[in-house]
Image (cartoon, rainbow, N blue to C red; front, top):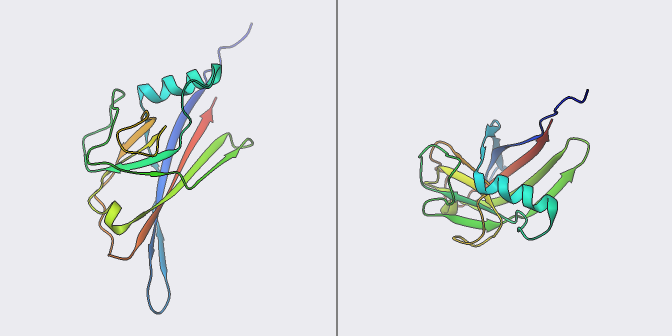
Length: 153
């Protein structure tokens, strides 16, 4: 008898805040935070298994809405979207890690994040969404984001 092994996808992310200072830079890393794979994200991933008619994840966005994530979410509010700077696959851990960096001007006041199939706001499909406490970092600082999707069994 064959058991039904359920395969899933989960995501998490963390921030690394970089404060440049005259006597030495300071880096602060947050704990990992969980996210939701939205319905369009699930459909995108399943369709990419059969062909390449769906776009890959190439953009990360942040927005201003603190409303709880829902499966039907398709966009972020007052979105700042950027191209993914690096994407790496680890076949041993079954993960794909996406990284990008935001300036203080881009990240301040934001409290939601997502991955997308396009690097331009308003285009492509949303894959993931999560909310967090509003961010405020000093001018001249930047915040890198590490976003990991993990295939689970």
